[in-house]
Length: 173
Image (cartoon, rainbow, N blue to C red; front, top):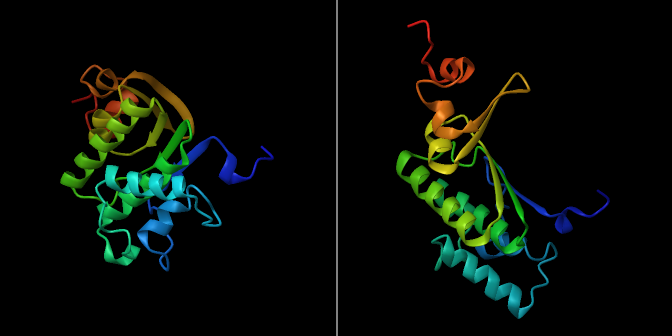
């Protein structure tokens, strides 16, 4: 659309979280409210609330390099929260996280969906993430949708051949 990116109804979290290295966590998150960082009292309160919701309260003054990978991802999620957009796109958001942090982030995203009703689309190569995050899954192969349905069904033993081959469970066994 002709709308500037800051006004579009979509927020996006990239695999590498896109935090600005020279800005503290508070400022990185507050960019979601005001790209020029001209913050009202309400903007500041929303930023602090988002940081609390993602477990980063007390880390507002830290630079991204001073955070763990999971904390950087949570800062990116907090920035999406303060934007208050109806759609959230996430591109491999947990790819660089260990199993414990992945589970915590999946729980946080699930809670966000339940609390806000926001539509959340997650691109992942991880069957475990898909099971943890989504009741419905679309499987894409070579740019085409080859399976669409309940995540548990598609990833189960009776799932489509393309999905079974992807996860390493070919029917030819």
